[in-house]
Length: 579
Image (cartoon, rainbow, N blue to C red):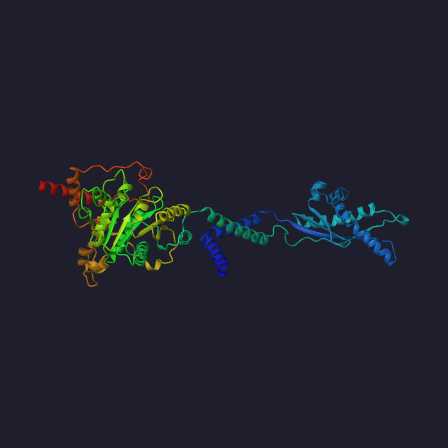
């Protein structure tokens, strides 16, 4: 019972420290800016010097102790008046005349500060000027003229003698160092002000920035674990193939960590059927589904990836597979499941593309035909991943998530807010869907693990033919032999010769990633059902009409275009022979 306040306090302290650590650059920048600004102003300021003189006031009459005590008390009571008198024209006009100053009495008064210490009869006169010598001369002159004026204004006693005597007791001397600016004090004050401003700015930005930045932000919204944190890809145009094209990169390792975490979460479920979705569009859910499927297939696990985003499907663009025949073709009864399954490369990954875009995607995904499709696929696969539309714009993922093992929510650190993630979680909880975990995508982080990327993530498919020709013409002893990305599967060994390595694992292109089975059989299902391929239709809903520049999409690659063209020519020749 008593531990709860302590845990709350510890959580609050950790949050504050996390904000300071995350925004340290702002704090440091403003601190340095404050100190440097104070230094610049101090250097640019004109130095001034201060000289001080002192005047002692007393009563010359009285011989007994009581007389002296009364006289001292009287003099103390008059000290404030004498301090004011030191700044009056009666005194200052005489100082201006004696020192030949080119200024008025008011301007001179601004340079003078007369103060009386408490319970004393000594008046201190401080004069500040840009010249140290002139400041001392003015201070001494004010002391002299003030003493004269005090005697003139004091009441007269016996023998016409003044009852107040003013005597200069400290002569002002030129100051050795300027009194202003005080560079050290100003810089220290500037650093302190900059530090305070930086800390306030850091907490203000943290309060105003509602985006989901770190795993701690996710943990504050749900008890579901963070399966992985995927960084920002250096090659955004290929983010759907990171595990295959950059197998040694940190993004690929992040997907493998997500694979491992997902494996433990679904250890009691075979097969594990997972809906992959996001709160809003453009968070990278389709590329996450693709990379996660490839990572799971690397572990020799039978994987089926289904494109159930029937509003803006993208897996066919990522893979170069035939997209006009797929999930919707099976759901409306125009093809069997085996007819639309397309293998992916030489892995244990199979893919079902979306097919034509239907006018009623929610009804199709909630139909008995969808459940029959999943029941039919269960015996053949260990893991079934379903790429679905975002949660907030449409209801499709909530419909599917309630009837499968659970859902994985993809959250983009560069886009989605905590409020949007919270609303998405509420919608999944409303249908009793199990949230298996969250994949934090597009995370910006430091290179603390850069050591493990000692092999460069080279993308061989981007090399030009000239570069490959130069590599082929280089002497064998000068050419390093590195294992291909799939060396274990291809039987590569360290004793493989250079020529054999070139033949076996030369430049991987996206052609290597396209299915070994020809797409013409899939096209034939569509041709037999409808007679001729039809253009894909769009619903015209708000989610469907989004720009094609979404972060969740990838432009068609030249290699993929060539593969589809060859597949189309092969399908035409096959159909002609069949006719």
